[in-house]
Amino acid sequence: MTSLELAGHAARTRVDARPEAEPAADILPRHVAIIMDGNRRWARRHRVPEAEGHAAGVAAIRPVIERAAERGIEALSIYAFSRENWQRPSTEVETLFSLLEAAIRDETANLVEQGVRVRILGRLDELPGKTRDSIRQALSATDAGTRMTLNVAFNYSGRSEIVDAVRRAIADGVPAEQMTEQALADRLYSADLPDPDLLIRTGGEQRISNFLIWQTAYAELYFSDQLWPDFDAAALDAAVDEFCRRTRRFGR
Image 1 (spheres, rainbow, N blue to C red):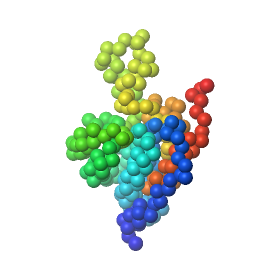
Image 2: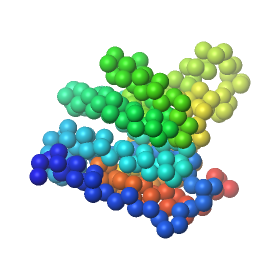
Image 3: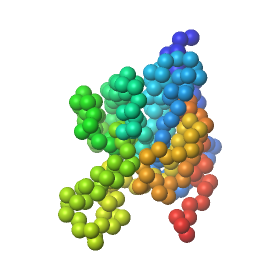
Image 4: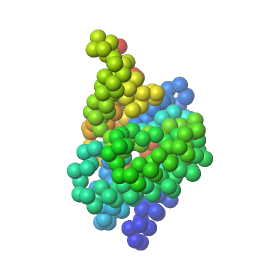
């Protein structure tokens, strides 16, 4: 079996497991954020080129989106490319951009059919023109979606987001004495969405890597040892069900 067939076989044989009794909607996370980590390690484990690991990671996104929408999650945020990722080899960066463009072309119609609205979190002005055009077409095509919002963090940095929010506040003429947490939150990339209730990181690492650092102040953290290409609908169910078993106190 070739490496590409291996990735396809893994995707086809994933089991979309559902709990026997799903939690009530009022205790489900409204917003789930995912740090998709482990593509390169997955490639090394399967002895295939890193590019195929990234391709397998892209293929893993669709079943997670579909399951999140099925479970009534309002917003799903995925960390696709950080501003720090520019430090990787240029060939890898080019591969990631190529995969993003292909995924947007291939998945837009499916997302429209599912009623999923796509948004990009990050500095689009720093991306190549071809990538920006693909993104804008997808944003326009899915704009009417109301079932779930999919935030794709691309060329994203949590610290840069806060800097950009401060710059917007200054540009809006907000005086220092009126600079409140709400004034800043209103100018974040995700200003019109609820903060993430659940932050998932795959790949066994236990850090948030500059992802939604303002918004996840009170998020429940869930770390999975599964590498991202192996994270499927059943794995998402396990994370959501763990969230539903926890008691959130918000400092109380």
